[in-house]
Image 1 (spheres, rainbow, N blue to C red):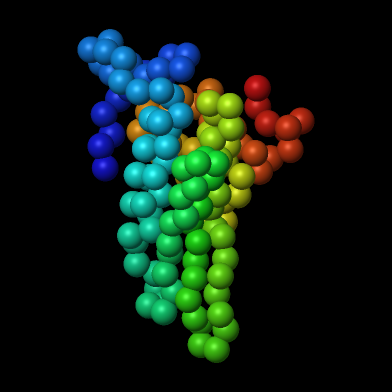
Image 2: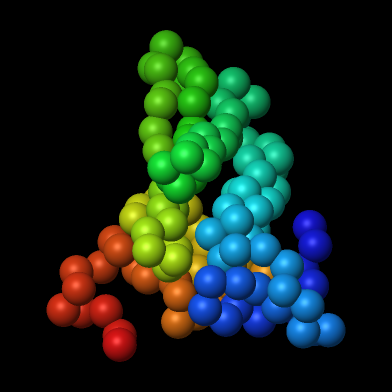
Length: 126
């Protein structure tokens, strides 16, 4: 995974040479899909269960999903969901031990543009 440091400003992203690269949403899409794809590649303890990605780049919705079989029980469980809403990354659900906000910040999404949507608005830090 490419973790080159980038600075996000307004609607564009600048690299360390101050060259405009891409609109912010395009950059966020790329970073989110890279981070989630890396987690989908990790093996599960139960080999009949897979972690799969669901990427809806048109609506800017991104998920990790556990699917498969645990004995005779069918598993189909969204475990992580991230949206891009108005140039911010919203973590909507996280049923994993992944510190997704920290990982997204490490690859270049400013913490100020990451919203913990799974926490009520009145409890979020400003």
